[in-house]
Length: 346
Image 1 (cartoon, rainbow, N blue to C red):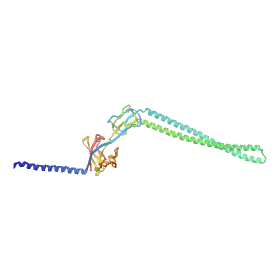
Image 2 (cartoon, rainbow, N blue to C red; image 1 turned 120 degrees about the vertical axis):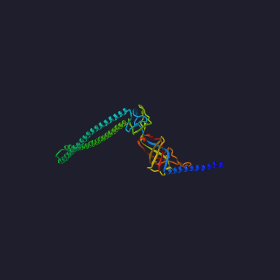
Image 3 (cartoon, one colour; image 1 turned 90 degrees about the vertical axis):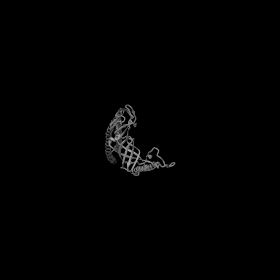
Image 4 (spheres, rainbow, N blue to C red; image 1 turned 180 degrees about the vertical axis):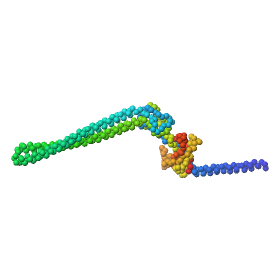
C-alpha cells in the first residue's frame, strides 16, 4: 500500500503541470491576439534619406578642393574649383565680338543717314523736274498757238517742243531715282535690324561664356555629410562625372514594406513605434505618412506577369512612408540604409 503513494502523487502533479502550461499558453495567446488586433508590425523596413549627387557642368583640372570623406558641408559652400583660364579667355572673346557688333550697328546707322539724304535729294529733284515739265508744257501750248498764227517759225516751235519732251523724260528718270533711293533706304533699315539681332546673339554668347565660367566654382547644393568622394586635387574631371554625394542629414524617414493583408486597418496619421537594429535601446516614435501608389514588385526591373504560365498567388508588399518624430541628436545617429522594425498602432 505504501508503494502506491508516490505513484498517486505523480499522477496528480502531471495534470497540474499540463493545466499550468495550457493556462500560460492561453494567457500569452490571448494577449498576442489582442495585440494583433490593434497593431501591425514588420521588420522589412529601413531608413531612407535624401542623397544629393554633386556633378560638374564643365570639364577642367581641379585647382581647389575643400572636402573630405564623411565631413560636413553647408549649403552654398564652395567645395571645388576648376582651372578657369580657358573660360576667362572665352568670355573675353565673346565680349570683343559683342563690342564689334555694337560698333557695326553705329556704322549701319550712319549709312542710314546718308541713305535718307539721298532719298530727300532724289525727291527734291523729282519736284524740280515736275515744275520744269509744267513750264515747258505751258510754253509748248503758247508756241503752238503762235505757230498757227504764223507768228513764229517752225524751228522755234520745234525747239520748245523738244524742251517739253526732254522735261517729261527727266521726270521719268527722277521717279526711278526716287524709287531706287527708297529701296536703298529700306535695305539699310533691314541692315540695322540684322545688325541689332547680331548684337543680341553676341550678348547671348557673352552671357553663356560667363555662365560657363561660373560653373568652374562648384558649390554644395545642400547641407549634409560628404560620402563616396571620387575626386582629388589636380585631377581632370569631365562634365557630368560623379564627384561625391551629400547625404542630407536634416531629414530621415522610414520605408516599411507591409504585406497587402496588413493594410486593412492602417491609415495615415497613426502612431508608429520604431526600433533601430543598430541601437537596440533606442526607441523612436513616428507617424504613418503615406502609402505607395503601387506594390514594390511593380517598380522592379522585371515586374512579374501573372498572365503567363502557372499562376501562384504571392502576397505582395506595399511600401509605406513613416515620418520620424525625434530630436536633432537622435536624428544625427540615424543613417539611410539602417534596418529597423516598425509597429503601427491601429
